[in-house]
Each structure stands twice: as C-alpha cells, then as structure tokens.
Image (cartoon, rainbow, N blue to C red; front, side):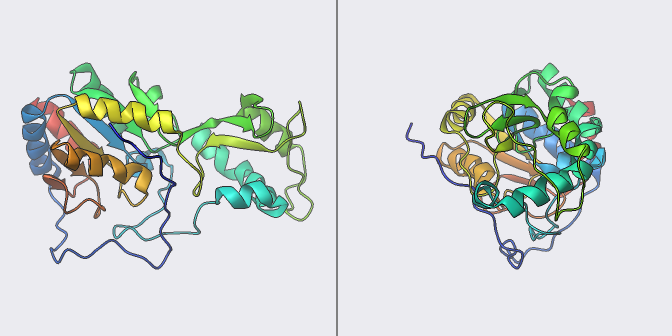
Length: 281
C-alpha cells in the first residue's frame, strides 16, 4: 500500500471551502440520527475520524467557521516556533491562559457517545485531530492521536519528555509581560521545549499515518465527526477511503472539504445526533 507522508496544509484566512451550489440545511438531530444509524447498520465496523467540533461543548474553541475560514489568528507555525525566540515567547506566555482551559476540560456527551460506539463494536479505531485527550478520558480505548497530545512536552534536541504542567508551573513563576517573559528551556540540555503536538507546517509521523490507514483499509467505512477536513492530514483519509471504495459519512456543523467524496452528509448538532443514532442501534 503506497502511502506518502504529507505536510499539513493550512489555508489562509481569506479562503473558503468550495461552493457546491447546494444550500446548507441544518438537520434535526432525530432525523440525522436515523440516517446515521442506517449508515452504521450497513457498515458496522468504522474508522472514526474526529476534529475540533467534538470538543467545543467541552469549552475548547475551534478555529474555523461553517465555511472553513479562520475565526481567529492562525495557530503558530512549526518553523516560526523553532527559529524565533519571540514566537516561542508569545506561545508560552499565552499558554499560561490557554493550557489550563484544555487541561481542566472534561468530556462532553459527544465523547461519551463515541466511546459507546466502541462498546458496541462499531469503532475499529478513533483517529482524532484533537490534542486534548478527551476521548481517552471518556473511556475510548482505541484512540490514535494524529496530531499528538498537548499534555506532554518534548525537548527538540535531546528527546527529554515531561508533563505540560511541569513547564506551565515553571513559566507561571515568571513575569507574563511578553517583552521580558523567559521561556522555560530543557532542564537536561537547555534545548527548545515544545508541546508534543504537530504544529502547522510540520510532518505527521509517517508510522502514525500508516497505522491509521491500515485500520481504515480493514474497516467497513469511514465516519468523520466534527471536522471541516480543511487540513490535509485529516482529509487524506477521505481520499484513501474513496480510492478503496469505502463508504463515508460526515457529521459536522458546517461544510467539509469532502463534500463531493462522501456518501452521507449530515449537517447537524453532533452530540444530539450521536445520541439519536445510538438509540436506534
């Protein structure tokens, strides 16, 4: 199975998803749940790909609107983080506010419903673009963190690894004024510390992608939940599913990049739709 490792491809703030000419109709969760349940009945063993829309009800903001455009300033680029003291300064300074929001977040009904799909043997694997570990907290066992995990920090020079809280506590003792803010460095070699997360412009590890694609190839279909699929690291799974004739369904509030590839498009509230589907399984 030939698989090429690709860089993530962030879109600029001015870009939108392609206009298919079809009006975007928001479905009632009961109707959407019925359609999703029928899809799962026909294709009972799924690879489930999740994105930021699954975690918004846990208080973790997403980045894009219903048309796929950026809602706020784009996330930090890998190359900028690695080469600019100022970028790292601002990243870790802002992290003093942003990290506790993610660390203290708890799973919402969508996470628990996806865990229930695993209990019912409808999930071969959950591949998540999120770095919040909320699927694991909700009890899902088969999870692949495609973009890494925000709760751990890695030294880019010597490989030293520690918890995000350890670095957060070291930074919290310092002045938050960005002009004077001192970035915590590696206690072993003084190298650059970076969350164990794939930033935009970086590579998703090839073996991680290969492992997920192996599961997709062995699955009955693909279910995408809460992702616009604007980043290629997620969209690639739809491309491979199409190539391998795997049925696909999307459940998302807003359009997705895979509009022309999928068999079932559900523009509906995620948690309520999953609950309605589970009631019919």
